[in-house]
Length: 159
Image (cartoon, rainbow, N blue to C red; front, top):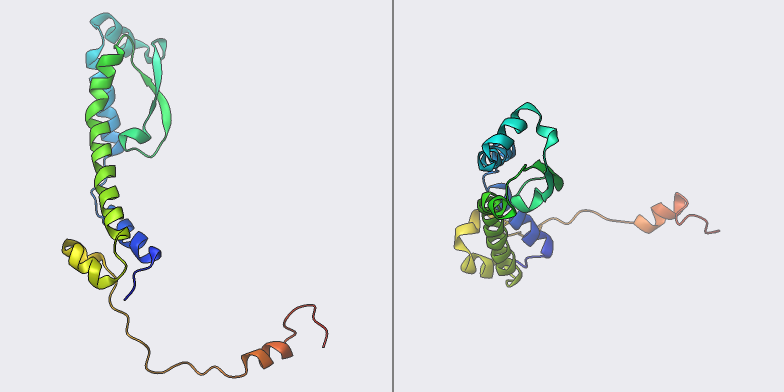
């Protein structure tokens, strides 16, 4: 059986759906907590009493594996290097996931048949479509054009 691009996209989507999802709320809270710990004691005290009084940076949450693309993160006096270090594990995990899925995507693009896909990626056989068997009884199709013409098809054509 030939694998179409639709089959390949479907396989990739099914594998992606089986990857455990990141708990975004917990991860964002962990990032905020880590940023708070990196603040100086005086700034941390001010942050606890009035979080909006401090410096904020726009970060791409999408790069960290979250759904929302950009929002502000209050960082106070945390240096850019310290913030980069805090965000690094999340960016690394997201990049690793993208790389692995890209490898699977290009492996699927390299095959054209179900048999070659099974040979190349035996671990993913459960995600592959089943072999299609030709139908034994073709549907009865008779006089479709005549019936459509009686109903006025094609529209606007005079008889």
